Image 1 (cartoon, rainbow, N blue to C red):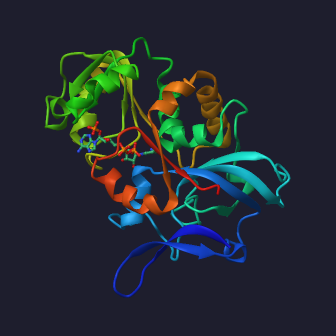
Image 2 (image 1 turned 120 degrees about the horizontal axis):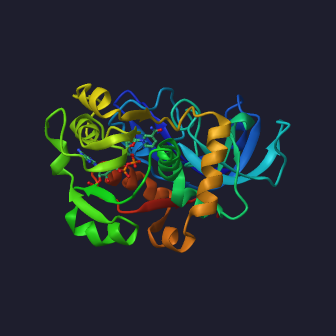
Length: 300
Ligand SMILES: NC(=O)c1ccc[n+]([C@@H]2O[C@H](COP(=O)([O-])OP(=O)(O)OC[C@H]3O[C@@H](n4cnc5c(N)ncnc54)[C@H](OP(=O)(O)O)[C@@H]3O)[C@@H](O)[C@H]2O)c1
């Protein structure tokens, strides 16, 4: 038996609770069994745990869109017992049982070898957020010339963001209201996890020949923009999807993270929580109350 979060849809609504499962209950469609060491709480996990948005598409469901751990059994040619692996996306935690569980059974084709220099905890401190951020950086690399502006709705965190590398910090309200189609050129590259007017304004303020990588919708799904920045400034808008990204792109992103990440700094922004606390953390991340990264420790 092992512990997991389980989401069910009883007649009275939607429930996420800590439960005990048997290995025999793990999805038969997987060909690799993994002892999960760590998982994490992403915005999408918050949506799944609370049921605020219909990201879970079959019930019962174990949430958790990512995890790191060790293979215990494999019918897949690439993996054998003892291999250290990580997983991001592929519908895990949405349509296939996920990582907020001490054991998981998934398709071997979805797994990435955990880079030697990263611990399971490091990998989940980075999590899908860090991996997606690296996909954005790699998309922008041929445009990127300088680094530096971070936008936040929490101005009290400006020093914290500067300690992580932001040269300057702006109020996110500067970007979140409807703006002109073409604005003062402010940056050469943007990673946007917000969407809506913020993404439109980010494009309108990108310097000639620069680029924007769009990966999220924290403000909204809409994109109230014009073609002006594209046809008058030649900017590029990259769409970034971490969930179904091809394996070569995943491996390149994790390789770059393993080579570039400052592990001390990563540890300093990480808070470790236990599995039962993941339920409350799901609501907290949606309420914007989480700072840094939450790692859910699963290995007993
Ligand atoms: N494309 C992909 O494959 C992919 C992968 C991972 C995540 N995502 C998406 O990326 C987004 C962020 O995910 P996450 O896990 O990084 O969540 P997160 O840790 O909660 O970060 C979201 C941040 O966005 C800011 N924010 C929230 N509401 C906002 C608003 N109305 N306007 C402007 N900024 C706002 C907040 O920053 P401040 O408090 O500092 O202002 C918040 O901390 C989500 O939409 C998620 O679905 C997409």
